[in-house]
Image (cartoon, rainbow, N blue to C red; front, side):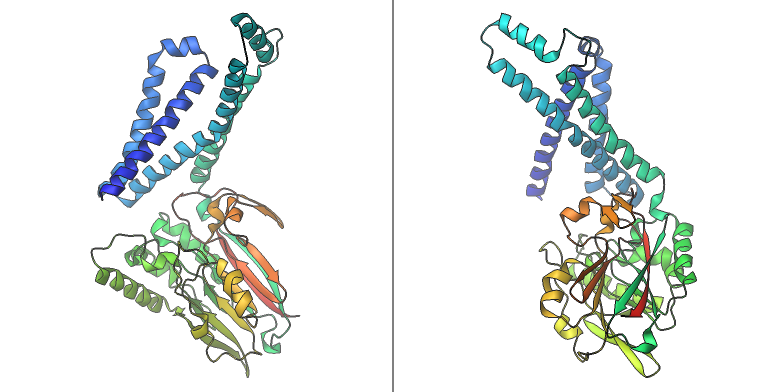
Length: 421
């Protein structure tokens, strides 16, 4: 506990240091004489800083509502994330000023060169003024965008994506077989039950033959599903709804009073899947039959190439009894599993369905062109990927986590149509 408090104190000192630097830059950029005389500007600035940092401590150490805690943490993130966009421009300006000062020999020469650098002999904007104001604009862009992502309520603007999947060994009976996929529900983040229900109605209207859910039903604990059982139990398909666990489903991000309480929470979540009518696959497989032909559905527990997330998946167990020649469809939450193990060791798996990334809930998509910061963490972060005959699809999620907004990356319902190649 002492180490945690010390860590928070160090973080706070660093953040306050950033605030001192940003405030100084703002003063020099706007109107130094006017702002220096007006102490109210500084008082308001530091009041906002104090409330922002205090809010985080309130959320960590006191029992408050989930909605208030989320709001406090999100404001903290937006507040400092925006400022960090400005800091590089202020630093460039200050380095330029320092370099100029170090290489000057006399005050007369200093004045002459500063006038030249600042372009004071013409009507154009000075380089320093340009850098400082650019920094302020750069801070404003993410601030406005992130708030717009919340206020626009895009987290419930469900988008259906359609993909035809060509498989050379697909049985004839499955040509045209329709699969729906949703992922990363994160029920503990929802605050609009009617909108969530609307998305499920969109999924059911597709009349899929089977539906896959690829993990993270909750944020931390099973009780988050209490208000949404009668929404997600409407997810139905004639040949089954198949589900797996994601990293959040294990309750690893919550402090439990005991290991027994944590284990009971997971047992309760298993029962939730059963009550929903979903076939939860925990390192095991099923067969879907159409007439006399079948395909294999394989489901593993969470497996990530990163040590930050659980490695509970056991493909050796999950593929036990699966015939080499039959179509094998794998449900695995984390897309890093595909390149790290599936492609290397299980070449007979035709396609893997994943989620996890959320597309970081920020980015853009224009047809086949897409971008998100998620791609710097996950080479496969959204959409369809292929290596030789093996395929991977990454769904950017039905729900949201942490930041209660989406910018450019909308919540996704994917509809696949299997076709013989």
